Amino acid sequence: MRQLNYHHLYYFWVVAKEGHLTRAAQQLHVSQSALSSQIRQLQDQLGHELFSRDGRSLRLTEMGHIVLEYAESIFSLGSELLALTESGEMQHLQRLRIGSVATLSRNFQENFLRPVIGDSEVKLVIRSASLEELLEQLRVHKLDLILSNRAVAADSSTPWRCQQIAEQSVCIVGPPGKPARQFKFPSDLLHMPLLLPGPSSDIRSQFDLLCEGYGIEIAPYAEVDDMAMLRLLARDSGGLAVVPEVVVQDELQSGKLEKYRVLDNVVERFYAITARRHFELVALTTLLEGSKQGK
View 1 (cartoon, helix red, strand yellow):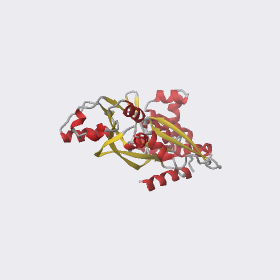
View 2: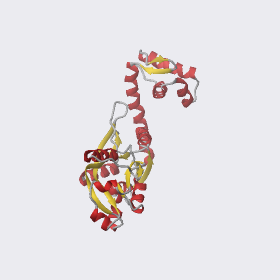
View 3: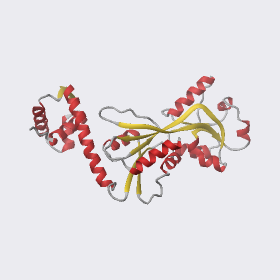
View 4: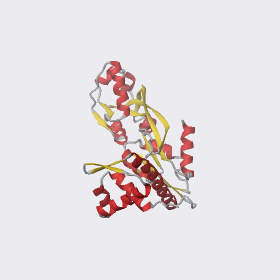
């Protein structure tokens, strides 16, 4: 009975991900000749060529793509096993590792995590980075969940589970009192300092389309990607800001800001992204079930 050499398969996996023998050899701390030998032995065992040359780069053959899918599953499962034993999930204390897109509203994060905040049996670990960086950590099971305002699609090598967990209205907010009562939409947008999310934001795209429909062109006073900074500027600048209501919920409740208008057909959607795994975390299930009930 043939036995698969997982050492050879791991070397193939690294080369396939790098697409370059030299970089893979440097990452694995082996010589190129030794690495080439390992790949040849795997190809001989499987009876198929796994790579074709394209200049200095390597391209996967059709069979190479199939083998890569199996390798992704095998090594992802190994990462999950290590993460599981390190996290304490099999012990009394659960460690729940949450990745949050750096620009995401802190208020939304706190609201979502509220069911497990203060739970003596759950240790929360929260990391913030770009979505691409977080997805790489999720892929190798260094995270259990990503909170994002962008959806992601799954494929054979990245089997994400992406579900929408909330949708928040977007509104125009500004100083309380007389300015709010006298505000006329959309004409006053042309005459008051306006703070907007950055051009890459989905909210900004929706807002620009809304303005286009009204036949107006906005010259923003400031464009801000980070929602925490947009919240501060909305509170302290004296201008108007286009923000999801959840971002400024505390300022609206305290009267430091007032809602001028809820924008039609402009919303922010929030997503929970997880990886397929063989062992479901109880605390994670609690959060996702709570988000369904809160919709």
